[in-house]
Length: 338
Image (cartoon, rainbow, N blue to C red; front, side):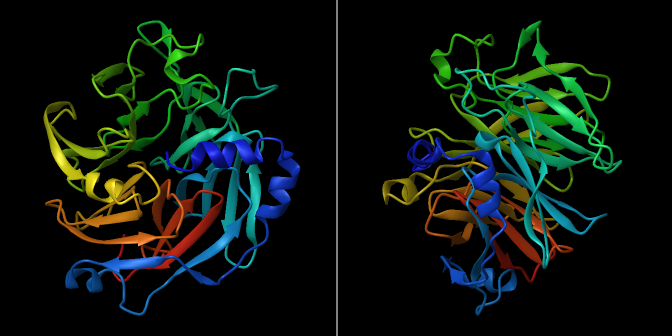
């Protein structure tokens, strides 16, 4: 991702405690921009709305999820191995530390913490654990961890990155090599592909697609019949759409949104996290920020921060869009409920 490795390198020597301390400082100064490419965007984001930073000082902010039962936001910092909790009036404070890999981080591991986060029907946190190389479930009250899957065909995953949960309980997740210091060339790598997978409630793991170089963000359409996949690939910066059958298995795929135009402009970022609103609008991060798309894939506008935006999520009963952007957490108000 553009700017990501430079940022990580510059902050690699910073103690985790120092990062956590800085992260508590919040700011509500308007920043970034909202590029309005269609009047239809005014029905989602008010014309006078602006982007504001809420906290800063992270190594690489990722995977936000709103916890409705507690009225707070959780988001991850994979290289720092911390999950933060942000609450109105309290700022961002460490919630899980370490969040992923427990104990010392091996030299060949670049991201030891949790990455993509979701909340299941029972209110538990389900996460793509880059460091442990697993899909895990965490009780938010006791913080007890359960590994749901860490292998496919007896071989360990590389570094699970993002996930989403279907109504059936099926978990879709991606497994690129971002958690390894040496990427695809890492001696830790066991899987021959960077895959898109499905995990059923009974623990069965199925490889849905192993053809893409950098599978990343995943999200489901409101009816559960389309699965969106972001490709964080410099040569193929796209969002793909998979048609799913009644069992949640793909029957075909198509190009949903091409981000090559924004990539060619030199805008910061690559396709990464995705969220889908109840009305079917897709919020996909990529070059320039969050691309807001109709269910048919038409681009309505882009919400930017001036830095790479890794992921986003809806919160406050759908009236806010939270953005994890490089070393900062940001928010923009929404009119449409997400």
